[in-house]
Image 1 (tube, helix red, strand yellow):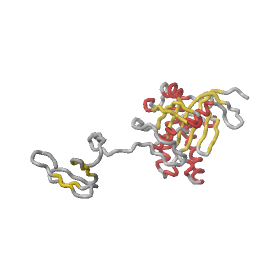
Image 2 (image 1 turned 45 degrees about the vertical axis):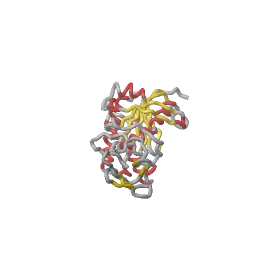
Image 3 (image 1 turned 180 degrees about the vertical axis):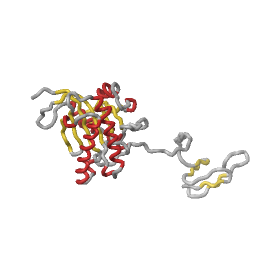
Image 4 (image 1 turned 135 degrees about the vertical axis):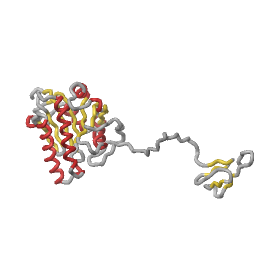
Length: 274
């Protein structure tokens, strides 16, 4: 067994891959590799030197020791997002490619018998598969990339060497996988989107292929602040009689409700009802 090496790790996953037909999955895989390769080349990264573990809907990449972390996060990810937006603009929703991208660093064994052993590998994959990341990408239908980074990457790279990134646009989230006893903080950003009004994720985790919408329901803007509704029993009370349903009240008015007859309400001269 070789000693583990400290490396930069990237986990990438395609949105709604399982909903595609066989042919669409085949084309998506081809376009996925083409777009990642073009984005890396454009910012001076050589994907040939990346050690990758492929999956149908994404990949786990272990970058070389000398890979510049700030260039990966601050330039490669924005370039990938631009290319995805341009690619998707001329395609139907079924043919579009939108990605969840997670970045972390740590010790990893490169000579595993069935993959890459190491807690850092598990960590970056958990980040990529997190419910808040899925919901955030779904909430911005024009976006190409939802980026999630570990706390260490946010502190050491995003905040110190942001390149094209804006640290203030990241949102702190909790990544939870209770069934796997995993809970860690992370930092999330849907690239080139304003997440200031994005709500905290709620509800059950979406399953692969299900439509997800984390956008808050919009209320009509009346220009007035909503008034609190008093917690009272509905209806009109007149003496010992309460009327529910369609009703009206006032001098000479008629209240119609559930009491089984019409009730005439008349105001006498001193202002009292009878």
